[in-house]
Image (tube, rainbow, N blue to C red):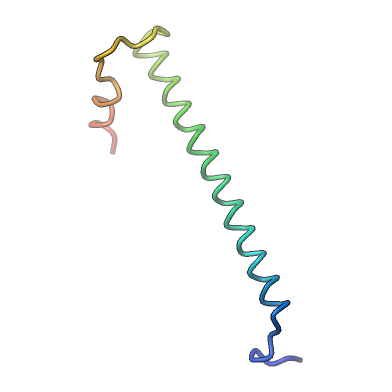
Length: 70
């Protein structure tokens, strides 16, 4: 059995690669979830507030909504 002090570069490189790959996967999943969240919020605003119409310039829907969010 090898001592912790004798870990070679190949093992260290492989562990670092696995960690980096996992971090990248987490970032991709988080970004995807955020994108879907914003899309759903936009759809809700469009459906319930705008009645599926384009917002006119100057409407402050997002601003008003954001003041009520936790």
